[in-house]
Length: 416
Ligand code: FE
Image (cartoon, rainbow, N blue to C red; front, side):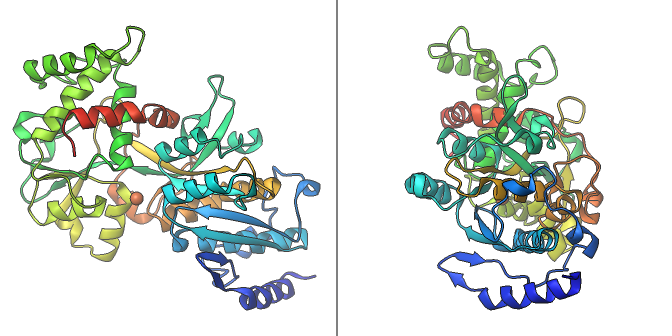
């Protein structure tokens, strides 16, 4: 069948069956050529999967914590590429919802779960899915495409249970009108007494903040001898932190000393809050623009969305890329894993393979104002405007492994 004829057929049949079933969506082929060339649709969608392993004329079921609009066109293009290459249909069924709710649902559905793939954001949440035993190891051929630090893996670097699909940074925002950009060059410096009453953050219930604190713990053992990192921690706060943790820290815990410093940092950070934590990431950026605080923390794509809607926002609020002289700015990932009870694991692998194609990576990152996980993929114009920066290359899996330690520290510091 020639290409145009096949696409016309696909459009007709899929348009007819496009309907919502609860929150489930069977993907139609609408807006098929939104971002992808015919050439990309004509290629093998998943070179790492043997053709005879695939369930053709079948489905792949995706549970996604990402909003429909952020993923739908990619899934539509996958369907088109699949049917074009294999001369058989694959139906992607998408169910979207809140991350924790979807994970609970997969757990409750157990062996009967229809989910083949779980997509969510933040390494902390991906780790939760792994810990809940709902994921199976990612095939090595797929995992090897993703830089090791941006995926789960064993101590020997072997394939783990999830991979990153896009990166997001969590920089510091400052008021161009009121704040001195050079007053805060690191996350550590947000806790400097000079910045008292100047900081807006969201609550410690946010996984994004939990992962930031986990990253600080993880990077600290190597940095305790860098004298400028924490010279502004007050002696009495450090002693207080030591008193809080000493009785519980295991002597063998490699993070024992790091946790003392991070707790002291978190305590001083809380003292610098301009107001009690409230709202989401976007609200923190808006609070800087509105004059409620001079500095805030938020994931980079929230700023991308704000500036895309209202360019004047960038006149009021600027980005500080922290820790450029040491470990780099904190980054995190959105990612996915194949479920342990997947009924169509080869189809799931095929879709993940497709999402790691260079053109998919470019589109997926651009539409979400995120950064690709693969190197050498062009950034969107807006992100390029935000500037190049040195990203922390910490192992993402550590954000999950140290999550409960981070939560305890934030709680002790009084970060509500
Ligand atoms: Fe978010």
